[in-house]
Length: 173
Image (cartoon, rainbow, N blue to C red; front, side, top):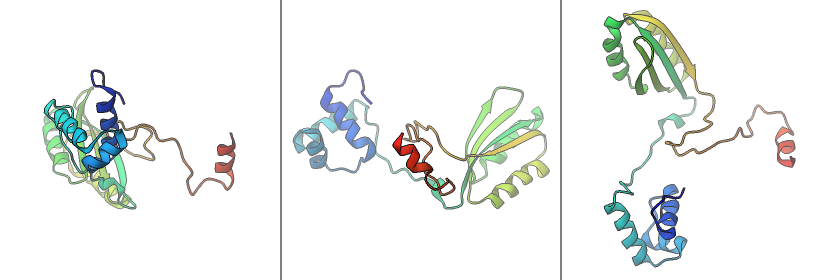
């Protein structure tokens, strides 16, 4: 990733810290070919300009073994739309809620620790929440692209269910 308006060194610094922002100024300098002091000065300047907005720890609760990321699509009766949004927002499983085009439609993204919890959650919505016209639930099988999450592109890789030798044939091609 190259940011227009930055010199080559600043772009290299951003590339280096993108994957590991915990590097020391000395390590950043070594990886970019500048001194520790220059690395510190440049990092501070990038922060002052707002290009680097902070450093954070990304915790991915979706890595729980047996867990399932899912999408919910719900169409509500207009009088119960806000109630449904509040109900979803109160759930620990729901990570994001979107109002989408169409009459009183909601798209929610969530993570369930297991399929049983997801089944119970969706059944509870359908059976006990008022105003549900339609509801669909889809589980995520794989992530093909997630720029915001840092996955630029993940190609279908070897999985346990692949036939023996298929992976070797792919590598030869």
